[in-house]
Structures are given as C-alpha cells and as structure tokens.
Image 1 (cartoon, one colour):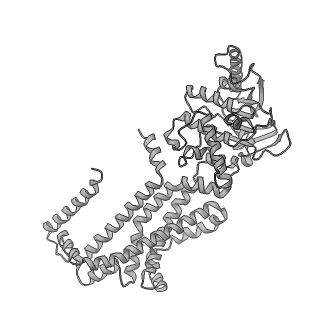
Image 2: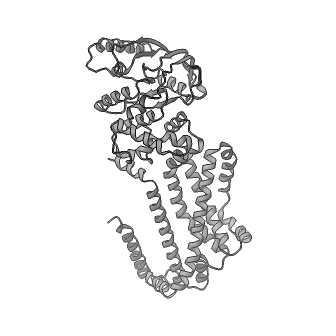
Image 3: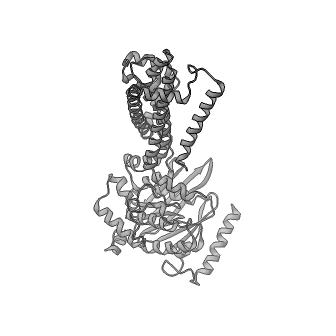
Length: 257
Length: 252
C-alpha cells in the first residue's frame, strides 16, 4: 500500500519551454531560451550562479511575474497549472504546524480542511521517508536533514506529475545530503523532475539527463546522459570523467561571463 | 530572582520616595509620604475599589474592542488592496487629531457614562494595533507564499494558515503597546466629564486637597495598568510558542 502511494499516480508528462525570456533590472538574463524535459525522468540543470536557473524554474512554476515570459507546453497539451509541485532550498515548513499538518498543508490550503484520508496518506509518506514518530513534533525540534525530508514528504503529498526542485539538498550536511538524494530518487521515480543544482556530482548521481545552462543571454550549452539508472553510487568510476567534463564546462561558462 | 526584580525595584522607589519626603520636609499637600498614601488607601478601600471597578471595566472593554477592531482592519487591509488604498490614509490621518481634543466631543455624544471612556480607549489603541498587525501581515516570507501559490491555495486559507500566524508576533507587539496606553484613554475620558472612575476620584480628591487619596488612586491605576500589561504579555507568549523556541535555538 505505502509503496503504491508514491508511484501510483505518476504520469509520464514531458514538458517543453520555448522562447523563454527574462529581464532583470534592465538586463536580459535570457531570451529565446529553449529547454525540453522528458516525461517520467529526472533532468538536472547546472550552471554558474546568476545565470538564471532559478528564474527559469520560477517561470515554469508560474512564480516569475511580469519580468518573465515564455511558452510552456506539456505533452498532453493541457495547461500546467495544478500539475506541478515545487521544492526549494529552504524547507519552508510552517513553524506553528506539527510535522503531519505541514505534510498535508496543500490539502488544507486548497479546501480549508484535512480529511482523515489525507492524514493517513501524509502519515504513510512520513513512514516511507523514515520519519515515523515525529508526526506531532514542531519543525523547530528537528534537524536540518529531517526538516528537508518533511519538505520532501510535503512535495510527494501533492501527487503532481511534474516536480521542480531548486537546490533542495544544498542546505544540509554531506551525509544527510547523500541519504536525501537516495530517498528522493526512489520516491520520485516515474515523475518528471527538473532539478536545479550547483553540485555536478549531485547532478550525475540523480539525473537521467544533465544540462548545463550558461552565457548571456543564457543557453543550454551542454547535455549528457550518464550511464546506469539513478540514484548512482558516488563511487561509480564511470561518473568521474563526466564529472571532469562538467567541471570544465562550468569553469568555461564562469570565465565567459 | 527574575520574578523578584520588579518587586525589588518598586520597593527601592518607595524607600527613595519616603526618604525624599523626610529629607526635604515637603508639605503633605504637595507630596504625601508613601505611608500616608497607604493609610489613605486602607481607610478608603471600598470607595477606591468601587471607582477602580468602573475604570477597570472601561479599560478592559476599550482594550478588547480596540484590539478586535484593529485586527479586523489590518486583516481587511492586508487581504484587499482596495481597502488598504482607501482606509489606510484615513487611519493615519485619524492619528493627527489629538485624542485629548476629541474627549469633550465624545462626552457630548456618548454621555458621562462609561461609553465615552471606552470609545476614548478604543481610539488610542486602534492605531498601534492596526499598524503593527498590518506590518506583520505584509512581511510574510515570500517563500511560503510561493509554496501556497504552486499548491493552488485559496486566498483566505493562506490568510488563515500562513499570513495571520506569521504576523502574530507583530500583533503581540501592538497589543503590548495597547495594554500600556489603554488606561490613558480611559482616564482622559474621565477627566473631561464623568461621575465615576479613578480619574474622577483623583479630580475630586485633588479639589478637596486630599492629596494622599489622590496618590492612592494613582497607585491603584498604575497597578491595574501593570496587571493588564503582564496579562497580555503572558497571553501573547502562550499564543506564539514557536517563536520562543526559534529564538532560544538560534541564540548563542
């Protein structure tokens, strides 16, 4: 039952952004940018800071406001609204709600109440992510890694086919990050994931595809498909040359900027 | 020790007061000694309590009504830009009118009874409560609002579950300030025109040169103000337990 809750509703929905354009304080960060995110797979987006990765994610999420524009299409042609979940670098847990209510926050915000079934589903997700026993704790009593796991549970609770992640694991320590990456990779298997990260190794561990965004105006300058299925081991020797390749691509992008 | 500190400070001030009276030999109709004030207080306890009940009721009613009105206004202004654009200038402008100048008008309209004093207290605390709460409501972490947007949240649910709880510490500051100034409104109202209350009693005692009784009434008023302040302070702390936790965990 609990294994099913995670992947049952996953639809392989691919996503395409065309003619994306963003100006910030009179400067054009990107225009005519194109990015394709294959359905049911994990795409990682790397790039130097300030290139507009997070802005691109916000554009897709509908959070960018007037400064950004672009054409957003999904494989089935239906609008994207209500079909994506968003996970940020900060866990964004509400400090006044217990863990369980934080996980089920979406239901509360949409309908004003949380049903018994919602609570059961939230509880199952917490168990799935190794958070049994903290349902009634306030977020302030948890460690950074645990809080980010709660945020992941909240993301999964939404049961959206598309998941956008903006450096979701960068604020936790190295060991917790490895654990989180594995949990996320398994829990989000089958969903269309677009994750912004600044860590090439993280991208290589988790991505079916790894993209590099660079330049001004920014472009998708490199794409690679690491061998094997994610989550890959950090010790996987095949990742090493790719890691070097990504690092030099990022260094070149940084020098060009 | 922490609980004793205010009592020690108060005791020290009383000792200083008694010493000043003894040293300067100031006449009792200018500054009575604390002992004389205590004696006057004990001799007139029923009278003082009767007037204190009136003033206390005015302060409490003014505080509750003002806090409710102020919070409602703040929420309406935070929720609807339209309300903010039209009402905020009026609220700010209302502060330009000295409350003292309004007191006679209020007594004229609402009579010598408690209603004009309650209105007075409401007027003085309405602005600090509204301003503090609105400020809090407009400073919601943008990350939370983004999250709610992506979730497809309803505006009122965001208000109820995110923006209001996040603004409770700010509302708390407004309410603490309101608790401190609510007695001012009530007493001003009593001075301008009344037939009961500690403010009325002080005017009467002063006119009859019963300065010790006047000081006893003043001391009682101060004590009531302190009790209200600490009660509100306690209630605010109880209402935002997560804030205490976050400050203690972030501290050195």
